[in-house]
Amino acid sequence: MDKPRLPARTSGVSAMRFAPCDLCHVRSTSRIAHRATRTAHPAFLLDSITLPAPIVPLMSALIRLGTQGWNYDAWVGPFYPTGTRAVDYLTVFSRAFDTVEVDSTFYAVPAAKTVRGWYERTPPGFVFALKLPQEITHERRLRDADDVASQFYDRARELGDKLGPVLIQLGPDFGPTELPALAQMLPKLPRDIRFAVEFRHRGWINDGVLALLAEHDVALALSDGRWIPRKQMLSLATRPTTDFTYIRWMGPDRDIVDYSRIQVDRTRELESWAGVLWPLARLKVKVYGYVNNHFAGHSPESVRALQQMLGMTPVDPSTLGEQMSLF
Image 1 (cartoon, rainbow, N blue to C red):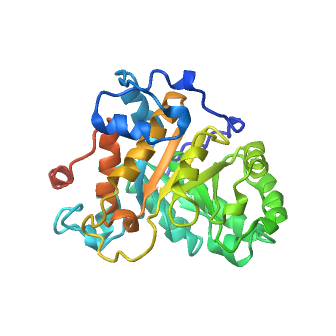
Image 2 (tube, rainbow, N blue to C red):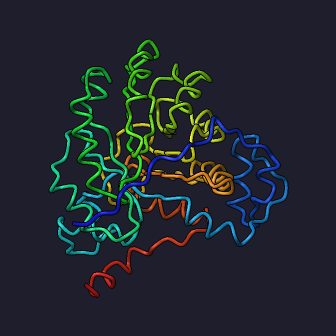
């Protein structure tokens, strides 16, 4: 397989803050857009809102929204056409969304053949976000893990131009006292791969840590979950540490076990996030966002709802069967 070379990492923004003047053209006439903007960070508050036409294609180019994983049998029927085989899930998924977060890489470094298979089963322009293996983040706690990291990076590069950010997910027990481990790891990150760090301990959220991430051109991953309050996450969205941001919609717990339908109305939460994504797109900050099934019950539907709020055009799952008949 002939894959394009990955471009070298470009210099990001340094803890950029948004000013109201940057956002004065981000407006919408819809009720949802108005409410989303009014519930966002104070820097985004606008009294009268209209969304200029150029912002919609801009969002499509800069905002990639997908789910956390694709291999769910419960999606057959409500999302995947009835009768879809598990081996075809990824191909069908890639006709509805242009990115996905791969959870399986958290548990083990994937085989090169597996990664090449992901590449081959998706169309040009599709992007994979990979999770750094837990052996590095949770077992070795970022220390003495160069061997595993090197192997993982080599496998990730098999994706070529379809490789998106790598998520460094740190556990809630990984506290600020372990700052030296993070500070020693960041300079070792390869420059041809983009990274985002997710903290699940509130003590990490301070100006010093944001500056450290910005120094190494690494994004702060924002999670809508139980670890750090949503209000604080929305505020942090106004302070990207590089030229992209990474958002994960997790939900408050893991009580939901049926992934075939929406069971919790998260409209207001998504509206709040839509209110911060508009200004990010306007300032040409790329967004990679991924919804977990535990957020509301059925992540594909949550993604489509957010796309609609942003003026994007979701793919109707009822058309996926028609697309399959063409192949």
